[in-house]
Every structure is written in C-alpha cells, then in structure tokens.
Amino acid sequence: MRYSEETLRYFESAAAAGKLNGPGTFRGAAGARSQGTWVQFDLRVDSGLIREARFLAFACPHTIAACAWVAERAPGREVVGGLPESVAELSRRFGVPVEKRGRLLLLEDAWIDAVTKAAPR
Image 1: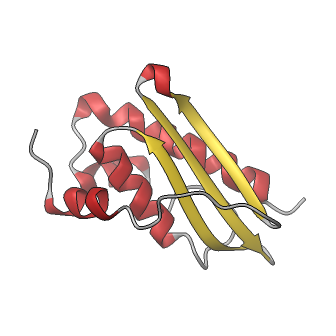
Image 2 (image 1 turned 90 degrees about the vertical axis):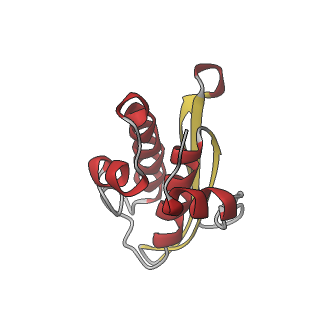
C-alpha cells in the first residue's frame, strides 16, 4: 500500500507516542488488539485545559499517524467535545481507504473516553 507523505511523516515520527501518569492525568481507550485495532489516549489536564497528550496504538499506519496528529494538536485545547478534526476530515488528511475508516471511529471513541473522564464535573 502507498501512503501519503503526511501519513508517513506522522507514522514514522509518532512524537506523541507514550504514556502519561500522575496527578491530573486521564486515560481513554477503545478497540481491542484481538480485533486488529486498539487506541489509548492519555491527557494531562490543568484548569480545564489539556496541557499534554500521549497515545498508544496497535493499529495500521494510517491510524497511528492520525493518533500522533491528534495528540500533537491537543495541548492548549479545552477539555470538551470531539477531535480537532472530524473523522471524515482525518480520513481525507491521511488518505485512509474506505475499508479502514472504521478504525478512525475507534480513535474518536478513545479520545471521547479520555476527555469525558477529564472534563470538570
């Protein structure tokens, strides 16, 4: 399979890959390795803002690239709502084939799980 330059750049660097722990850290996950795709986001939150984000993923290069992109854009965002871009926009950005687009829904589910846990109550 051929990947776009942006997909390859984010997949190969995956600068935001890893875990966060400690006070103010919230974790969300979705999917299952046994099903071929699993995504986890860790968010460090202070005063209602995401200060740091990391991800782990067992997934295809498209999904890993999209996770890296989302985590890179998270710092400074309020802990509300959905992804920085819709699943459709992420699909276009990373050239995700139709048969793989469901994997981006798991990315979205993991993100929503994390921000829901982090949201002020």
